[in-house]
Amino acid sequence: MNACTQVSLEFPNYECGPACDPSLCNAPPTPQPFFFGEDFYEDQELGIQISKGLSVRAIAWTGQRVPYADGGESEIEYHRDSDAAGIISMNPSDRLSSGYVYLANSEVGFSQGGVYGLYIDADGNVVEYKALLTGTSRNCGGGYTPWNTWVSCEEDTGGQCHEIDPVGGRTMETVLGGSFGGRYESVACDDRDPSNLKFFTTEDSSNGALRRFETSGYGWGALHDGGVTTFLKIIDDSTYEWTTNEVSAQISATVYYPNAEGIQFHNGKLYVMSKVAKKLLVLDVENLTYEVEITGKKMYGEGDFGNEPDQNLFGPSRKYMYFTEEGGADPGVYGRFGGDGTYFDGTYFTLFQGIPSGRYSGDETVGIALSPDHTRFYAGFQDAGVMFEVTRDDGEAFE
Image (cartoon, rainbow, N blue to C red; front, side, top):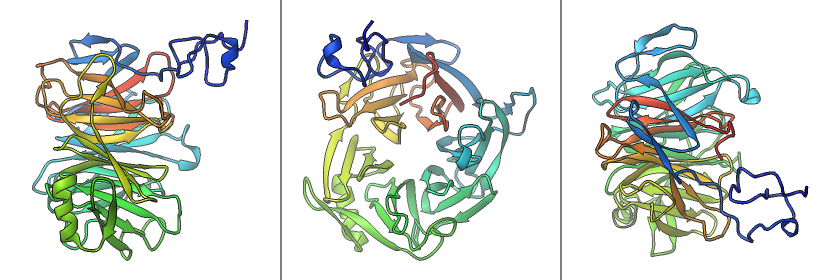
């Protein structure tokens, strides 16, 4: 037996792991990354088509009390119009054994929205559900801070972004939305230099300019005052700049990135979803250059990512980015592989989707988030009001 006889989960098509010596086996020079979605099976009870290799269970339903692992249930019903979500560890210094909170937005308007928390132990059992932020409107997207809090954004006229600490029980309106507010969507942070943090906020409007906020501090309070705000202005088909002229940036947004939604930052690059244009913009923050990719153009296996992309989320390896989808006959949750410079860069695949023209037709997938150990993937459907826990059948973590 040589060093290559154990089948690798990351490279399933041949008996060779990433650390093996290619001379000892018949591995191809450019192995295919691990993708879900090659084949589907249907769960008629849940109404979804699921990639083989994954299992899905429902954990909460709008209008019903949330069931707890001990047989009890929540005092309040699960909220309406769930949208983007995040996961905060109960103890960031002991993330794998301390349990976590799944924070989910409520996109209800007229000051009836907010953020709600599913408190989950380290084994994935729901132990509590409660309101964390109330009195806000159309809480849509959000994002993380480096100090273990979540920012929730209101996608409403004059909307603002609110910081939530589900462990300490604190909330506070931030200055990310400026004096006049807007229809804000999502937040990402460039935290490579803790003394000069940069937060980026998207706005789901045809002329919503991407905002960059440079903090003057770190930790709770850094987003509550001070700082400097600039806006993204695309110059041409490959370059951009940051400007203090919001009007010129809004004109740029109308042409190049209308209705910006999900946003992620990694390794000097900013990944921005333009929903209506069905584009993924990749901004190089050092060189002030960018590239554009049409979402779902290169699909692997079953499924079709042909409607409007919404939220996005990096997996722990940062080679996989996951997306939600709005509209269509079979909205789903998808992944995108990238980062190794091979043919497989930009390949999309399906985790699960609604059975075509079934109960989720015209709905949107929401709430993608990963548990701290990355073995549980959370997502659901907004209008139908159901949240799922997704796990790999092999017990491994999502990448």
